Length: 201
Length: 201
Image 1 (cartoon, each protein chain N blue to C red):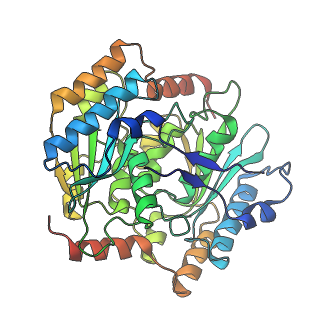
Image 2: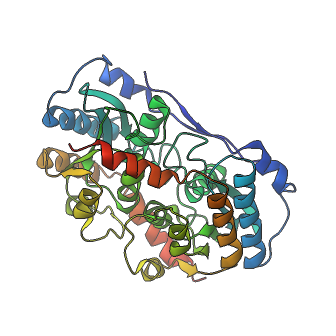
Image 3: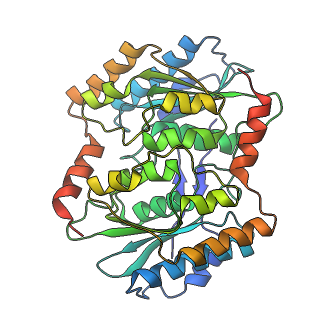
């Protein structure tokens, strides 16, 4: 009566990442990998210009990548951050990435999280959030970020989640522009505009 | 290298719901079904005391139910609302429940959405959000709701998403108490508390 829903990364993600034991020692290396995934997601036509990754801060390795799969999977929940968090928790076998003794994970995202993904961060158990492009960079090409609390950085810091912003912001922003200039579907606006016109319930 | 993630409702959900063609004419009938699912989720031991449902407002039928599967699936994203939205979009084959001409869907949730689920609502394309218990009812038994914007109801209404609150609030709240008094795991607090103690990155 009700279907199963399966989340599966596009095959190119694994091929591109290659060696699972590779280390990413610096925050810049981790962001560079993530931005490369966002660019490939556009070039391969598998989704919006967003990528994310959950990295193991002890081993300095990638635990799980994520790319935006909203259109690919017909699912508005599958922003890149959500994909990375879901897969990371599947891999460790726990709903709380902060539950393991002596372990800490970092969520790297090419654009600051929207309201949904921001709300998901504290429940995920990540210790640090690293962002590339800013909210306003996403908005400048037509994407919405939703109704975020104004002091979202402080709000995460109060929960002992460190926030690092503007890492390779220009490189991350360039992928947003690439998508918009290539005529990529700005699906949030599309949905919302169609929606506003149609319903008056 | 990276696993597939599969979301599947517990078998008892389908058995309980029974006839897929049954109509739920009133908002109270739709909430009553949803609260029954939240109670069963506790009694069957498949998750937290929360349930949701996406209903077709034209046909007055249930499109997709959701129950909290955070512990069942090791996934902090799987709040009841997210489960219902993911399955609803899978069933209609579109990431935007507002995209179909002449169709409108309602998200019924037994407790007002947390910050993550609230952020997910506008992207989902639902036309109406119906809530049972209030934020403070969830907090009163130890659950967190995250950092929601203060004027979240108005924020949704501005997007033409109607919000209806306090439908069978006491019945919904009774399930929250049932869970807490039965020693149910308040997983958000557990995670956050463990988390706070452990990391100082």
